[in-house]
Length: 128
Image 1 (cartoon, rainbow, N blue to C red):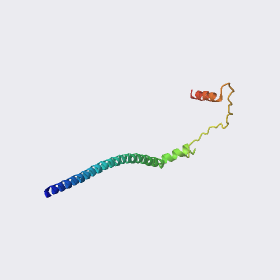
Image 2: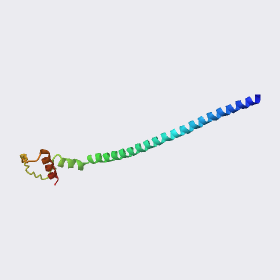
Image 3: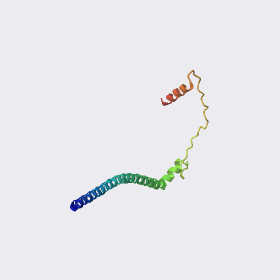
Image 4: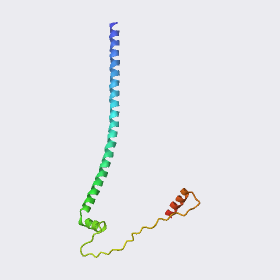
């Protein structure tokens, strides 16, 4: 009789150990899956960040080239001639008269159409 109690006690310990082992294995599987999901998100973030870094690096390079061009004498001369209307010594400057009169605004002729429709017609005529 004592042997049967001992055997029953041993079976209970084995059942408890099997249950604990199942929980441990389940936790390890869950942790592994969660870590893989986290690594997938991190990989996508790194890929996105690296692409943005490449784009910003390309923009920086373009801006550095533009800054180098703006520091050249050719650019300074171009701006002086075109934007500031300056000339070099020895250049012949020809000035054309500018007509600064403002034409009178043309008032629209009255039509029997509603205002919105006449504006639509005017807008369409502007395209053609």
